[in-house]
Length: 445
Image (cartoon, rainbow, N blue to C red):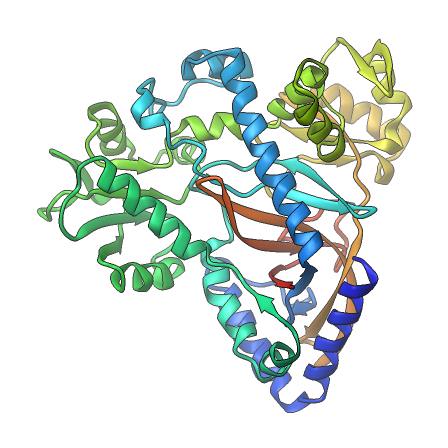
């Protein structure tokens, strides 16, 4: 966080402090909004102000996220045009939802939320998160209006040009365009499956206001007959898949109707399962190793915005300009490195070298070699200031915290940002919503 952003955050906090009687009520509204998807840990200080980014920072974060997502997709397609062959190269069992149909897969990268840490002022992309199951869009649909409409925000906005995101709207416009391109006529019908019906209330309301009949569905209620249907209702034009397919198969969820829709190209299932392959962290290792063969502009983007990454295996790599054996390097430079599962999320399975003892690290490397892992240079995050409320102690204070800033890239355009704070309770060096909190991001022009 630069000095301008720090001063702006302090100003927002001061405005809240001057309105102290409103703070507990605002905090409770925020807590309630964040608890729709999952219970909020009351011990975690609750951000009641947005992360404030200067336009310059926001623009570079947007550029880094948008370009690295583009390069990740291009790197995959450079290696093979076949989704099934790509799955093989990545060491992933092809999903029954994976299609080879090019007209369907053209939309695979149309939704993304790359995770970025700003380090010494430079955005570093830690993973790409491509697909419709990306989290945060629905949370911000509840959270942004609460912060935007507070009396402190109204005062702040009178003094500064401020903008929030429009990702719900941008995604709705994208899905409408896809349906129309596929020949859908009249008022569109869109089923949504994910965490819970309450999670999507704002999305359903927004869709209804713009000519789309959107509704939550349980997978067990789906059939395919000329399109996905819920019971005897008319077929859906769109199906918004807000869950990770691999997890659904692992949990034994009924997926036959979705498989039939994809196979018969009836209802469009957003996003095509090819997106999950683009999201593999292995692709960042591919970008690291192939950067020297890319055009200068793309090479510079990777060198500036992608931390050095390699597949964890017995191989030789170029690290800091020297070709060397990877495994001795990993053991030697423990404090500079992180181990990550290639398809993990939420910080699960991540081992941070600097918070791990030497013997424990060596054991972790042995264990991770038996799975599919990458090793990545640890990126030390800059901190951001947030006005926070701690419920159990009823205290309100300005806290400096590390944060992951995630731009939403919808159809190639950045439409908003999400922040996940860290280091608010013990997190072992991993920033995730489980040890920190979700926060809105506003841009100050």
